Image 1 (cartoon, one colour):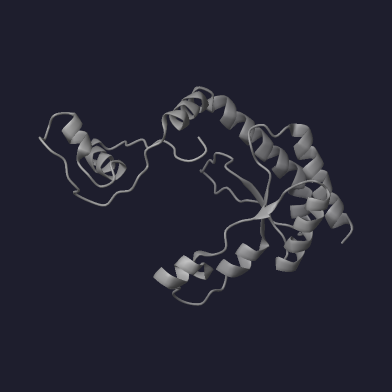
Image 2 (image 1 turned 180 degrees about the horizontal axis):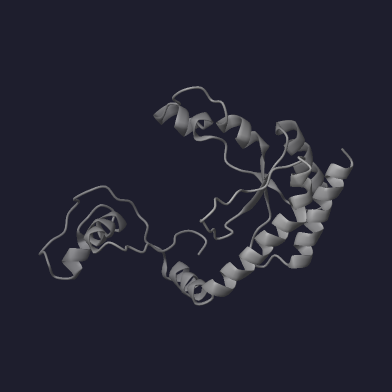
Length: 193
């Protein structure tokens, strides 16, 4: 729904904890149910409450969830199939879905050889009217990660893999013809190298 979402709690023993987190760390929901005479802060929490407009948008999406997910999976598979030849030739890497697992086609990415190649590919795609972006920088490299965290061990893979990753357009209104165009532009880029 843009920002926000829904939380489903399978374990009834965790429902109260989820309510407290949702209610900014308070037991406010118990108060509204009449279980306590006043509410107060009892644990960690934050403001996750959606506006009525966002909730209405989410409701419409939930009504079409199967259709939306099916289309996203179709587009994801179209990317995968269309770029498999480049992957088989060792030019790029494609997402790996572990055996026995499924996914929701949240995004589609490829991995270029290195940062230089990815940068050139993003620029090339932009010239062709396609916005491709890199993913997040590794947490340990971010200002908050440097301030609040620490990296244990040697950074053998994290930064290197982050510098190779490029996300392709993936959204519900994306059309199969547009995906074909994107695939063809990527194929042309690598044909020139």
